[in-house]
Length: 359
Ligand code: SF4
Image 1 (cartoon, rainbow, N blue to C red):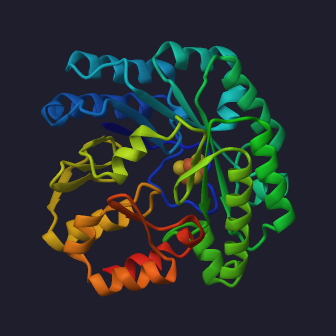
Image 2 (cartoon, protein in one colour; image 1 turned 30 degrees about the vertical axis):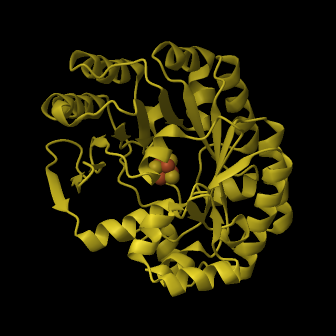
């Protein structure tokens, strides 16, 4: 599993504090690509193809010119970890897709991308403007059409809910619009106010108020009901897929498979230790931290219980108090399925509390 972080965006979204820069010239792309290619060569021994996936995330990978993307792919090939990949996902911005058009989307396909994740977030123009997204609803629909026309048969849409300025009506329309496009996968994230985002400053200055828990809950329940009715599996708290379209790469994260994260601010997991790169464009250092037994236990529980697959009973009973597990089963917060325990969908929304209590 290989993750490549592309730290460029054309503008910054209100709610985001990821490491990213607005490219001022072409030189930054060359510096970035040089750094990633150097890193690929120096870390090739860590790459493990037992789950052969490649994921370009960001930032906005669709801002990176194709020539640079090709150079990264060629370098992966040179070190013996080139395509085809079981899953090769690229996060794209709808506005980039519309601006660059069908030839760009077709080129992504030729380069081996077989899953596109479209950062649509909303189909409400007012809300998109408030988020400082570059696209509007019409451009989002157009981007989807272009990606489909390019021949992609695995398209994911990202949406956001739980904003205090998102009404239930607009949320319902947003879900309906997303489903009307017939994507194979939908990821829906509840808005969180991140450390250094514009939104965090607005919250501090009293210009934004967080949505009450009951509103978020209501919007989440509506989402779950609509997705189920449309035939989607709710296979992870924030992720829904038509059967057979569950994300392999992200699934690997939740199963704590090893992965190599390349590029500025990317994180990696060796199967034992976690590591990360500095958040600078090039010349970044790689720092490693070993996890304690306690850290491993907490991580395993947290990641597995976010999924519908749940956790193995042996692990659960070896690491949690049996009386807590039994109480949660009695309360309906955990259900047993064969040799595994999982949080049922109607308790996904409070999974953090359930996991905290188990730990
Ligand atoms: S949400 Fe995505 S596009 Fe927006 S600033 Fe963050 S990384 Fe860039």
